[in-house]
Length: 308
Length: 281
Image (cartoon, rainbow over all chains, first blue to last red; front, side):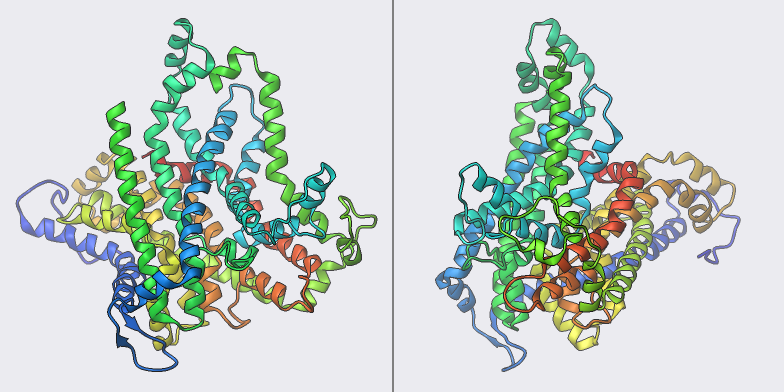
């Protein structure tokens, strides 16, 4: 990797007006960045733009050459109850699971931030749900929710609750949310924990002297201080869970009916059945939701910073 | 909450919290592991048993007879290791360039990379599939590794940039003044100091790649490139009749999560430092 740049070399980093030094630096930067840029152009930027183009086309590679159809795909979406239901559940899934992940994340992080000696074992098991494949988690939970042999069903039956987790649409949606919350709360908790550790101890001491109780110091000190972090993590989780396809795919295949189908699952289904134009149009809807989340995040950020 | 617990001398509350937390986290694992050593006829029993009458290991060889398990294992290893090494190497290079070798537009490149994280992976699938059909990259390790390493690259670059920002620039400047070239400085000074970030991201990216479903599902349709995630789904689909072969699937699940559990146990600190660096910055 040592290039043929002949020594003695002057101070390359100095902000000198000499162009050759800067040029050398730019060349190094270009070479170092080239692989990442090429990868991202090839697998992200081009596909992004091409998806938008294809969303205005009727395109199935098995049959005709693609034809421009304007907004026809989007009109089709407006009349497609499966996709419309998927949009609805996507929003429920993304916002619902993020909310509970943040909620439980704060609880778990506070627990891990306890002054007591925490067994290392607890920190380790906290990471395990995050670290296992979603496929394994989804298959395992699917079986625990099974109407005949499932442990959860059996345990609830013993206390008098009869829930048909995977055959009742509303319950199936709850089941999917439970798995998503179980799987990603640890990741959220670890991130929040880092924020909690940054809150200066003196603030709590001062609040205590002033007679604040635990809840008051949590609402008055901890929460405002970690709010910007919560917004960041929340944004990240919203965007990330919009892309979750493996959970409904593995656990319910979008069922019963299409109750637990999300947009990501619909796109995958349309891609596999070579419905490329329609898949692209649904993808564009997903881009729009990303934009919506981004706008919400910026608004939340402004609010958090003003209130501080 | 911390103050709350302290004020109420909440030792007990905290430990009860730990126990509840541990049960919720570990319950599914207990279920999967126990199922994998339960004889088939006892798994399909109503009401279910929480501990089998007899333990057996016969589910494991039965699972390996049903699918080419070790082939999938090897494929997963090649896929995950290849994607991990590629992404970390390229991201370390890019991260250094973006943190130190400022050039016109370097902030824009960084911003573009970070924003590209927000594009859902599945929503870019159609054009990638066209490219892969045209270039015959389906069912190749190369094609899979290109996609996977690209997917984890933006986050890895982000971590690298924030890490390089923390290294004092003076050492590099001194080396340059002493007449070292940029490349010598990178190899002899920057690379060794970046070792902790590189190790962390090797672990994290391996776990993410090992767990990946979508890319192998779409682009690895033959047994010679299928990974374990896809294999687990095939195992479920190839079941006779309507019920899924949970006896075989639980055995496969256990063997699938062994590598990541080992990494979590030994790399816990490194993983946490990597995951939180991005969020807190």
